Image (cartoon, rainbow, N blue to C red; front, side, top):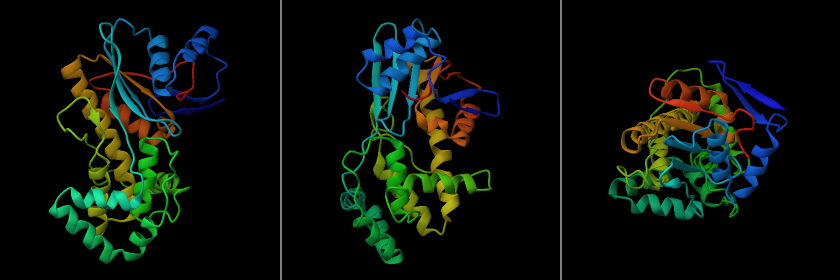
Length: 271
C-alpha cells in the first residue's frame, strides 16, 4: 500500500485495495471504462447518488474524462481529451489555427530549429492514452524539455517540482467551444501557448510549473461553471495524476472555498 498525505491532512491511497469492501470492488467490474468505474466508486463511497456531482478523472494509463452525475440523467460524459496522431500533424494544426499561429510556428522553426527537427522525427505511440499525461509528454518534446517521448512527461513533472517560485505562466487550458460545458479539449491552444512563452525566453522549470498550475486553475474554473450551470454540489477527483502532491494541493486549495471535495476513501485513486 502507498499513500500520499496532503498539507490539509487528506490521505490519498495510491495503490492497494485491502481496505475496500468486497461489494465495492465487485461493483467496479460493471464498467468498461476506468473513468466511469472511478466516478461510480466515488459516488458509492461518499453516498452521493442523491446529489448533483461532477468528476475530474485524470489518469496516467487510461483516457481522461470530465463527467457529471445527477439522479435524473445518470452519469454523463462532458469533456474528452484527444491527442494528435503525430508531431507533424500537430504543427500543421497550429499553423491552420490563424495567421498569428502560422507566424509563431515559423519563428519557432527558426529560433529552435534543433528542437523542431527532433520533434517532427519523434513518434507519438498510437496506443497512448487520450489524456493530459500524454499531452504533457507531447508538449515536453515540443518545448525541448525531453529528447525522447518515453520520459517526456516525467521530465516536465520533475522540472515543475524543482521550480522554486509560487507562480508560473498561465497556459491555455480551454475547450474547443469555450463557453460550452460539453466539448473536446483544445490541445492546439494548449501547445501553442507554451511555444509562445518559450519564444519569449521563459525557462524550462517555470514553463513546466505553468502547465501544472494552469491545470489546477482549469479544474477550478470548470468546477465553478458546473456549480453555476449544473448545480454540482460535490467535486470528485480520481485518477493517478492526482497522486502528484503539488497538483492535488493546488487543486484542493482553489476548490475548497466553494466546493465539497471527494477523494476515494477505500479504493486507490485510479482503478
